Image (cartoon, rainbow, N blue to C red; front, side, top):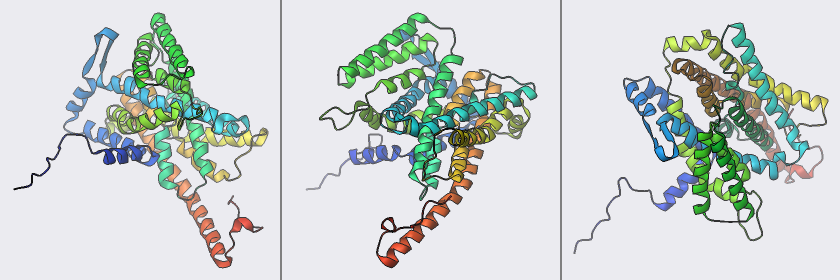
Length: 432
């Protein structure tokens, strides 16, 4: 009797262990950042290939839900819809930092918060100066203000084998505050005519969301329909729909009740983060980063005042803003730099903050609705982000080699006398 062989599933779901492994990988900054980078590279190749018309046709294809007043292109669905999931995760991360993380006490939060605000103000000022000097539009002042959490943390994760863990905490806090600032800017400065009935409905939905959390109501069947309704109302109100995502993230409870293994915020983040990193943000990048990189298009980046201002703001503005803001706060206030960090580390981190990929592309689309202008600004964002990443990699790799050498010296000392350096006086400290 012949044994039947199991059929192979070609287009079915992966087995549960493989799905679990992929989800865990996407929860790491390195993998998420690489997926994001891969989507951007595909977009650039596709948009500059003989199949560029197919790319534009897919990006501009419209579909929607007429009953909810939604009729969007694929590109807008990714920017207004899927990116709301990214901001939901960012809102949860910010809430966690405010409640149990670096932002819970003013003393530990002061430096990264000041660095974040200066890292937004200085790029905006440099943009305004550069654009005004060239007779350009000031509409894009907010484009170079944002730091891309996923991309920046991915670059740091690839470089950082021996860098202090405090550097990641500083960058995470800075990027989260930076994203909150970007959301407020989108809500205040890039909002179309307001529909107060829809906006009131969105706030009523958020109040219901808050009440469900405080009453400890559990079950996705309550929150998913309510969340979709809040998002649709926020979109129809004229406020950018991603604001709904960050608002719900801030409402979710981050503290555990007795008997809970995880807080609601931790559970949602654990479930949603792989989708955000593996689907939502890469799809946004796929349909936002597809710009022409011909010689003529690249010339516009360095000759037109608006793209040039974005480039200068991202690279020079972020370094000056983050580093000088941190230094001045430590010099003239009671705030102190973490003893595990050196100022050379902060300089590398300031360069890393110039990676403004996701949110900068989004603000660029909002600030420049004309396709040609938007493409030039997007090209400037891509070039500026890559330049900032390359500069940060050079600076932080030098620091990483130094910390690695110190670590190896301490290991040799431990092996020589059998007594860990932490129990000896005069053990090697952090390099300055």
